[in-house]
Length: 138
Image 1 (cartoon, rainbow, N blue to C red):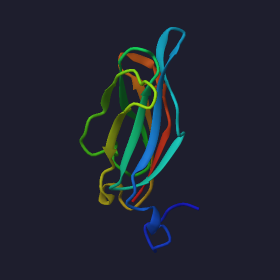
Image 2: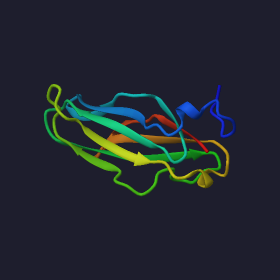
Image 3: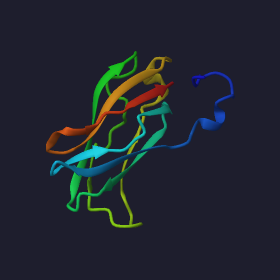
């Protein structure tokens, strides 16, 4: 069942942060991103927090890029904010880097859901990315 903007049946899901993860690993000696989830469902005006884990042994900068919009929403679903984050090597249970972005308010989506294809990659390594989807509900 899909979220809707009417009724209270989805009220318990609204207003909560959504979470994602990206893990930097070495693949054939080069940094690459793996992790998940494959898709994040979110309502307009909510926040997504991606936990960034770096297992490469050296600092890397993760960056997020919107690749494609499928629906009537804006070309970029996010409010202004940093689209990249430096992540030092993650050791044990230490603090991990986090990329936090807020989705634009509901009117930007013209009362229709919009799917986005985006990529989280290592800056300077264009083919290092993870390309999940983001579904935004007004």
